[in-house]
Image 1 (cartoon, chains in turn blue, cyan):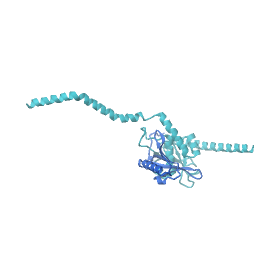
Image 2 (cartoon, rainbow over the protein chains, first blue to last red):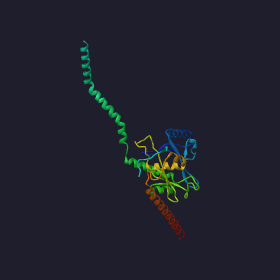
Image 3 (tube, rainbow over the protein chains, first blue to last red):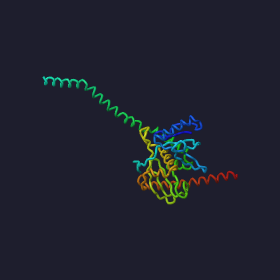
Image 4 (cartoon, helix red, strand yellow):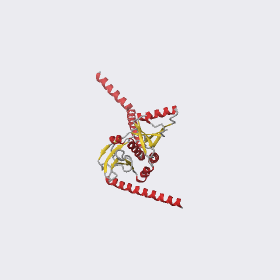
Length: 87
Length: 207
């Protein structure tokens, strides 16, 4: 499993990577996961249904992440905004 | 006596001032420079075209790996993404009663696919307050990915967080109508291409 974070000026960066079945690596993944949530990030897991439809699932704790998920993507939480670049 | 002491004190202060003036002014100037330095550093690293292009390339690869092939082709060819509404009779599928258009760093637009009528603009941003390179703005395709993930995972929550406005507040409605026409033309061409491809494979098999 890979924990990725979307970052301005960079694209995604890999925060942590490990095998969820290995306790030590799982612990590292959990720590990195908590750090990002504490920093105010949202976490999403891209998923694919049986009929091939893709969507994402927001997760609020590491326990919510499907065990077979390949990656969790962290991104800044949404804020209502009105960018100046109108039209 | 008092007058003499007072005069001596004034002379002493004046002498001390003259001796230390250059050091004091240098210290003040140094402090001012140090105060301005972080702002200068931020503006110096603020924008690097090469870095932003590389970031956008990475963001495009990630977006491509997350969304469906057809959606990726739509974004690549047209510059925006359509997401079907998840509430209603035909949720998240062609023929849903409403849909959204996701543009990079622009509001999400809700519209009726049957009529093309625009419903509303949802202003939402994903500012990274850590500002790693002086800007809180994600690369374009990361912004689209963030909107897509939030919309497909929790449509109600995202819409509740967004500032809702009538169409035309930030995105030109004429431009959106043109984009909807481009989208329907693009879909027709795609269908035609796949029909031609199927026919060709039938002919090959028959031969």
